[in-house]
Length: 138
Image (cartoon, rainbow, N blue to C red; front, side, top):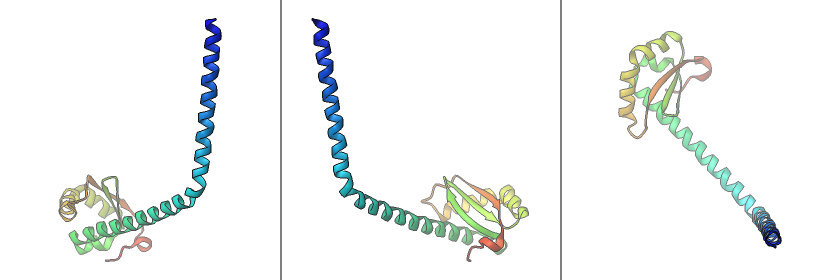
C-alpha cells in the first residue's frame, strides 16, 4: 500500500517537473526571438564604447609616460599598454630595457603614480620591440 502511494507521488512529481521544464523552454523561446536583435544591438554598442574607452585610456597612459621621461627615453619608446595593474612599455633596444628595468623603474613608477593618481599601478614591465613598426606619436 505504501509503495503504491510512493509510486503515485513519484509519478506526479515527474509529471510536474516535465510540465515546468516545458513551460520554461516555451517562455525562453517566446521571449528570446523578439529580444534577440535588441540584445545584439546593446552588446554591439557596449563593445564599441568599451573599445573607445580603452583607446582613451591607452592615450592617457602614453601621454603620462611621455610627460615624465626625457627625450632619449621618449624617442626610444615604442608602445605603452596597461593591463592588470601593470604598465608594459615596449622600448626599441635591449640596453635601454635593462637600464629602465634595473635602475629607473622605481622613480618612474613614483612619477607615474603622481601623474595618474586614479589608476592603481602595481608595477612597470619593459619589453623590446621594433621601433619602425610601432612608433608612438610624441
